Structure formats: C-alpha cells, structure tokens
Image 1 (cartoon, rainbow, N blue to C red):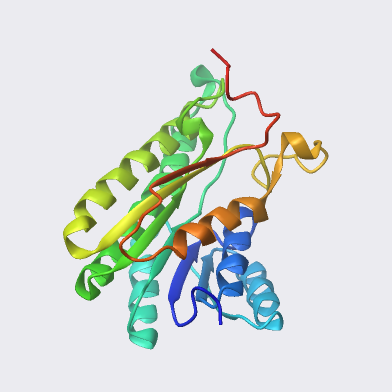
Image 2 (image 1 turned 135 degrees about the horizontal axis):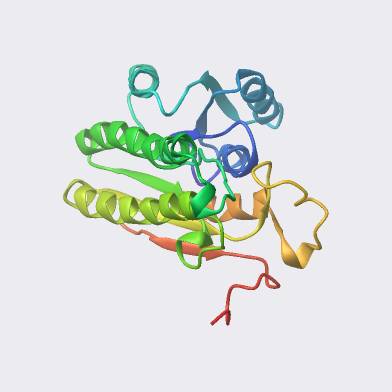
Length: 242
C-alpha cells in the first residue's frame, strides 16, 4: 500500500520527460494515473511500463490546447472513477529565440502549449474538486520564472504566467479545500532541450528527481500544501548570478 493508494490523478504532457517520470512516481505510490498527451504510442508504452511494475494507468490521447479534448478527458475520468485527487500540469515546450526574431505564430504556440493548456486542465479539475471539496493541482514551471535566460522571452513569460496561475488557483480553491502548488525545475535531462544527456550529473538533473518532489507534494495531507519548490543541480549558475 503506497501513500497514494485509492487516489486518482491526471498528468498532462505525460508522453516524455518530467510528465512521464511524475506518472511513474505517482503510480509507484499507489495512485491510479491517467496519462494524457498527444503521442498515443508513447502513452501506451508508459502505461504498459507502469502496469508491469504493479501500478495502474490509463493512456488517453489528448491535445491539451483543445478545449473539447480537455473537457472530454475530465468528464471521462469523473464518469469512470467518480473522483479526481490530483492534476499535474506538465505539458510544455521550450524556445530560445531572440526577441526581435520571434514570429507571432511561435509566440502564440508557446502561450497555447505552456499556459492555455494548463488553464484548461486546471479549470476542469477545479470544477470536479470544488464539488468534492478536496483536491490538488501541481503546475510544472521552471527556474526561468525566477531568473530568465537570454533569448527566451516566450518561454519565460509562460513560466511566470504559470506561477501567477498557481497563486490564483490556490486562492480560489481555498474555500473548497482545493489547493495548488508549483515546481520550478532547473536544468533537467528531457527532450525539450537537446544535448542535455551528456552533461555532468552536477549540472543537470534526471526527470525522476523532479518527479520525486511532485510525488512528495501529492502525498501531503489534504490540509497541508507545499506551495512552491525549486529544485536544481548544485552546479547550475542560478544562485549568486547577480
């Protein structure tokens, strides 16, 4: 029996990276995890891996930027399980384009994938969680919401937006026993940024390390919230940048 046995959660952006690792970590603690993303083949592989390890998972192909897709996902989960204990918003893409060269289409894509998808999922989660008067939403942001890199205006703006969204969700959910948290990972080995796997361990984390923080947040009592967590490699030039 894990710390999350009997609970149900949705993880968006679960086809790779932090989302996939979070789904595995939550399932290892006993949660039934609905893994959602665009790439169905990746989701099927993840669900099979979770179940082979003794966990429970459902793979659902979803475009998290589509309102219809998101509404259908949450209705289906509520109809099958009659509850929703956790939402992890992990869908996201990265960009490193100088401000004066960033096309409007790319800006809009970044906002849709990184921010609008989180809003749509959080809105539907809130509708379920308010009625059951409990639940938790965890948004995966970035240390770019604390200290931006150069040439990353779209990425930085969306990650700052995720932190603001988290604060609003926590405030709006408070009267109903619903809370929200945000995780700010530093340099992490994922598909978002190429050539990360070759970095020394002190300079880049594994997605499983971020997932451990998400699982810790999820396992807290309903009355307690770890609102914000920043996790980064010890050698990353974040502290003392000036």
